[in-house]
Image (cartoon, rainbow, N blue to C red; front, side):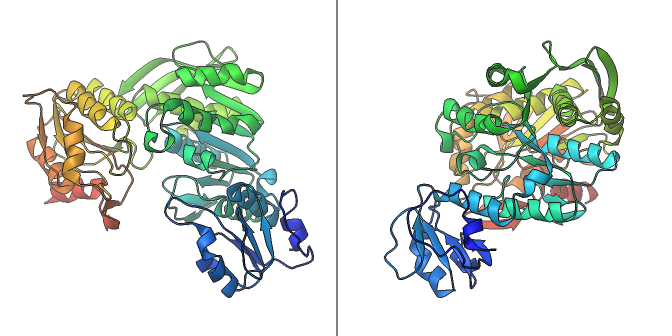
Length: 477
């Protein structure tokens, strides 16, 4: 593609030859090839501007940067390299989301569950679909590994281009606050923006809840239509701001999509969905009110997209449990063992409350907190577990470069002195095994924090680790 077409709409300073043929784009100098554009981005740990000379040696045809480059090469200066990368990527891949019905889901909790529910229902309705999110990326039946909730704009546009080339018409993606803050989704054509909730998370990055909310709301500024949970205080604020293009959903208030008559059993949760004065009975394999809201969000997103409500409701019969979201660990011990990704105070409160509601015996909580992340949520999660669970085993999560014992010490500040309702086992494997050892028939164990993850990050090394695998191996042993 000619350079003039790749940088269409880009504001920059510098002279270029628009007829140069561009063969690719990179923001990592190691991936530059002959004829590529190299976009220098300042990251958290390294600055792409420091690697311009490497990009030149590898054959870069043009450098895009935020500061002057004192080298003999074609160079243009831009105000924001990340926004420039998004625009260049969109142009290079010929604006692929324009041809796709794209649903973006954002919020603190529920994003992964909703995207998978949407995908299950689209499959049931014989639509081949794409998915981008925390667990994996999917292009139809092709699975692509992911390293972040929302990839960088270059990878996003490449993924959507592959979907477009496969004639995939529908896609759903998780949109993280980091992605919005870092302009990764800038220029994507969202048909529906769905908001789940906003509770404390990522304050190590955003500093306060107002900043966190303002990043989330960016998704709703450009989306054609929005679907918003008005049970959440931030959702209600967002709905009032974008009411003219918004659908609302709720289980506590009057809304466009309303859930009521919620009943939970060992098989899952059923409820009545009311939309346009018609009632639909929905049965799901999930537990609790939070997952009722997730299912309603998935239904509402597809209806807002223009699909028939009766077809969408019928498709809920094909919903499958989501990996690492109150995932059951099968056993013949008479114990409910559930693994969940809950790693925020609100999410931990939700899953423990759900577990408590159907537990005949004791509720045992196993959790830790991640290192190099928001420290202020640690005591809050300790207090929540102590208050709801009958017994808590505090352990390690992904300590990263922090000392696991110091992370646990932070958690313990939220627990009452002289409490006999907890113990500390910093080794996560031993903690999980201990929870099963002390459990009796009728008890429920909730292992929280890592969910679908198959690794534990200690220092800077990813070690293979799966909560589900550890529990199953101990049960079999």
